[in-house]
Image (tube, rainbow, N blue to C red; front, side, top):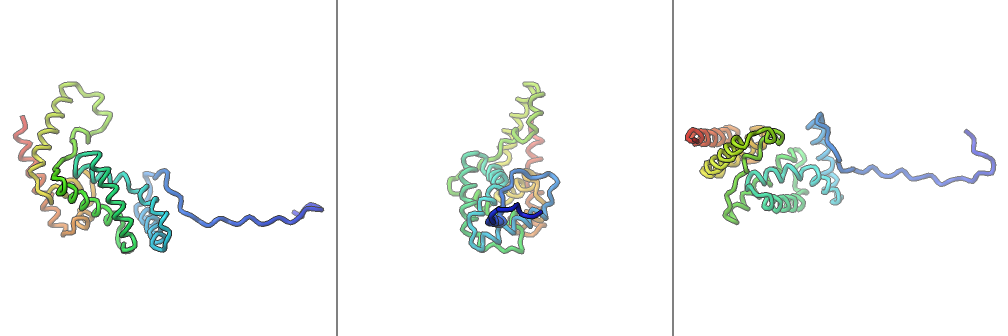
Length: 215
């Protein structure tokens, strides 16, 4: 269409530069490969100097890191402190991250090591409250007797879990509580898959043996 008579020229509006917008929601059907590609693109930009984009990584992984820390130390406040330390350490080491590797594996390894350091430093050896791992809606239909039984079972398992050594506990948390694959756990723990399976086997065997003694 032609410009109306007498109209003056207008300055063209500049097209804003493409920027990464923090995810507000993640589709359950999202491809892990696509997500990892997006994460690595963010990291490339951070390594190039756009450090303000680091918030996107914390938004994506905050809950996962906090979950691992909580399952390792069993305390929400401690897990919050550990999560902060994990992201501070990640921020200062992000330029050293190898983009050919999987970022989540690298990050979870930092989280596990930070949790271990925290336990050693403060001499804490806590475990997740196992009665809180069930489906929330299930508890609304349970009888008081059943709730009491599960509470007793949770206390018994926590006492039994204290007998696990450090490596067995790591394998147990990452596999049975976090649901990670053996190959990723092997990378996080820095050992062969067969060794991870051995620690996991020993942990489960010990817990099963103790559970046979539960009244």
